[in-house]
Amino acid sequence: MATFLGINLFGLFGQLLVGLINGSFYALLSLGLAIIFGLLKIINFAQGAMYMLGAFAAWLALNYLGINYWAALVVVPLVVGLVGVLMERFLIRPIANEDHLYSLLLTFGFALMLQGLFTHMYGSSGLSYSIPEALSGGTKLPFMYLPDYRAWIICASVVVCGLTWWMIEKTKLGAYLRAGTENPQLMQAFGINVPLIVTLTFGFGVALAGLAGVMAAPIYSVTPDMGSNLLIVVFAIVVIGGMGSIGGAILTGLGMGVIEGLTKYFYPEASNTVIFLVMVIVLLLKPAGLFGKEA
Amino acid sequence: MKINKFYVVMLLLALVAPFVLYPVFLAKLLCFALFACAFNLMLGYVGLLSFGHAAFLGTGGYITGWLMMNSGLTPEIAILLGTAAAGVLGAIYGKLSVKREGIYFAMVTLALSQLVFFIYLQAPFTGGEDGMQGVPRGNLFGLIDLSDNLNMYYFVLAIFLFGFWLIHRTIHSPFGQVLKAIRENEPRAVSLGYNVNDYKWVAFTISAALAGLAGSTKTLVFQLASLTDVHWHMSGEVVLMTLVGGVGTIFGPVVGAGVIVTMQNYLSGGELGNYIHIIMGFIFVVCVLAFRSGIVGEFQKVWKRNFG
Image (tube, chains in turn green, cyan):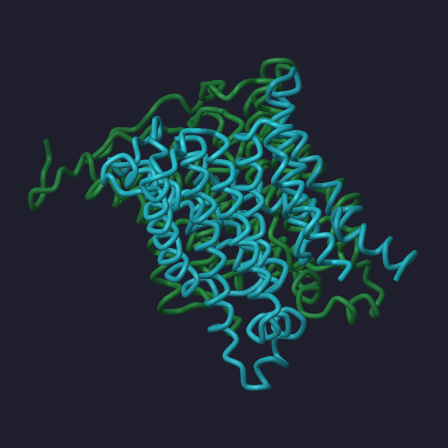
């Protein structure tokens, strides 16, 4: 057993890996939340349910339609994104001019419905989705064994987050999006179809959650409440990072995953609560969040 | 005068109700009504949506339950201490959460209540997943036997009336006027020299303590304290009760609690029990889309149009 200064390196690296994996999902979900918040100024309480929907959709696609993991990576986010588009168009837009708290409550109710529906149909015990064959192996590193699928999750998440960041910060489409965040009325006056951009943005943010759901299906058990438990942690992460910047959401997500992993190794009793405690400290020291812009 | 007559009629109804309906059910209803009223103090009169009020309901319940099982205190003292514990937690959480506004406030309170959930899940004294079972009701002031359901009901009614009166007093006091001013126009309240965060903080603490009072009482009624009370589902339920009854109306949360608790009781017995969360989610969506004033709010509108 390799040890360094009395620390079991196998255990430590193992937990770091778990932390990075969790962090990848935190990053994908909080990125989706931040994008939606930027334009619509609402928090999508259904983001967790959309993640759950993504995982279930992948399972259903495999078992009923024979759609394999790789195809599901493309198809499922599109389907989940479509659900998001319909939700924005027919549920959120009618109350866009009301207090934003109402749209928050609406998405919460929607999440309850989805979660209740899947609990009713598939029970709460969980379904299993096997790891795709091409990624079922692993690599032996000096201090740990790295399963291919876990490496893939981290890489895929970093690439997706990076591409999204690039698209928003560096492309013309992203410029529209940022302009819409600053001043939607003015942009509308310039002849840009703002409602369409809002709908598509919502769909894209939700599709990210759907993608995270597909990626999660092989390593976490697919259960109706997989999303709600994760989402509350992601909310804490959003409060920690603040929603001022896209890059901030990604970095905070990954960083909190690592902190959680380290806690699991050094003081496992606190691993459930450490992110909430970090949130408390951040609220005390820097209430607007690490990357927040508001006062 | 009209309002006063209305209250007298309601009070008379509440006094005779246990001879018609099952007292434990009525006591449950009153506990949730008080919980919803406490929650409404924040959402309806300060305009802040707390998504973590289950933490206070559960804290009151656990502390009172533990005291009844282990200390030999009389129920009224146990309830008082449970309420105080929830108030202290509310003061700490309030201090943290009023630093953020709007949807951030909702997220902070939700995250903080999840922290409480995990602590109670792991703490040895709560009984973890099993909860605290067989909590004795004890004798009120050492004299009145609360294991009698009718006695219990009247005790709960007295507690509810006290809580309701306190909220009524708070809202109609100068303090309550400032709260409403903050809800309507916060920058203006700031410019008038009010320390807005302090007002929000005090309101949050009162609201949390009263939610704890509801939880403490509920533990005695059911002789049980469990993780259900601190789960985020419970925080969502109280939002729904208030929304259905009418946000920002004094009587709305009572009506909303009545509707939701009755519905749950009715559904959980029948075949539709499996659909309960789907139905509740559906009511949420419908209320937000088409029924934002709630039952009492809509009723007031109709009343004003025809008789006002």
